[in-house]
Amino acid sequence: MSLTLLIALAVLLLVLVAGVAVLLRYRRGAVQLNATDRSLVQSRWQTIENHVAKGGATHFRQAIIEADKLVDYALKQLGVRGDTMGERLRHSEARYSDYQGLWQAHKLRNRIVHEFDREILSFEAKQNIARFRMALTDLGAL
Image 1 (cartoon, rainbow, N blue to C red):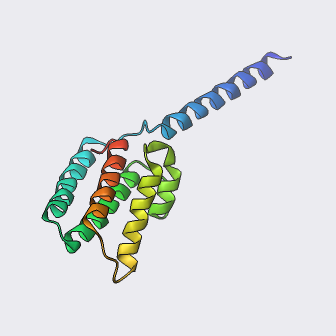
Image 2: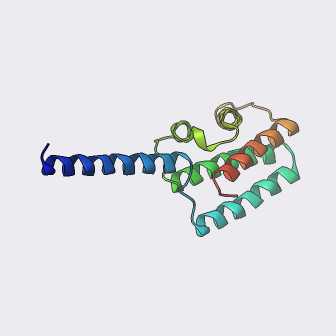
């Protein structure tokens, strides 16, 4: 084997190893929000908590919608690919300690927005707000 071929194979191997390392780093959530984004998320989260504390269907609805938007914002800032929140959730599944719970919370948000008469009970709102909070914690935003 010629020296040139050996060098070319070594370079190719290094490129492949580097590519795998970058992919693993991304999938494990090594990309993080900057301090400004974390501060914004924390500030907006306090507004969501205030809605929950006030109680009532209107405040619960608003809290769930805002929490969903906040998770989507964090995903966009982290560079997660996808045209919709649902796509971004699917592309970031490995980042969450309770992916199915987050997916259920997102589906509740969709029902709230698309079903005119969708009622929200206190326990349901609090459970799903907790799911959004956990997702933001998993993403390093809270």
